[in-house]
Length: 135
Image (cartoon, rainbow, N blue to C red):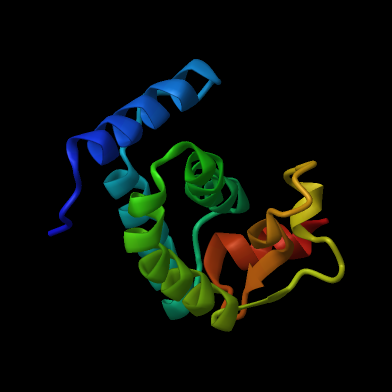
C-alpha cells in the first residue's frame, strides 16, 4: 500500500516501542491507530451511542497519533498526513465544540493541542446522550 524505506519502517517500529515505554499498553502500529481513528470517525458520523467512558477510550487513538507524529520519519509523515488530515476534517464536521466542557466532567487532559478532546458528536444517542445529561 505504502512504499517505505527500511529507515522509514525502522522509525515506525521504534516509535511504537518508545510510546510503549511511555505507558501505552502495547507497541501499537501506525496502521492500527489510523484504522482505530477512522473507525471512530465513521461511528461519530453515524451517531455515537456508546457510554462516555467508551468515547474517552476511543479518543485515545488520536492521542497516540499526535504522540507518534514527531517520532516517525518525515517521509512517513508526508505520505500519511493527507489521510490523517482527511480523517480530522471528517471528525470536525461530525462534531461540535464542547463549549460547556461536558466531556471534561468525565476526562481531563492538559494537552493544549488536543483539540479532539474539546469536541462532541453532533449526533448523540443511547448511553452517550444519557451520560452527558446525567450531570
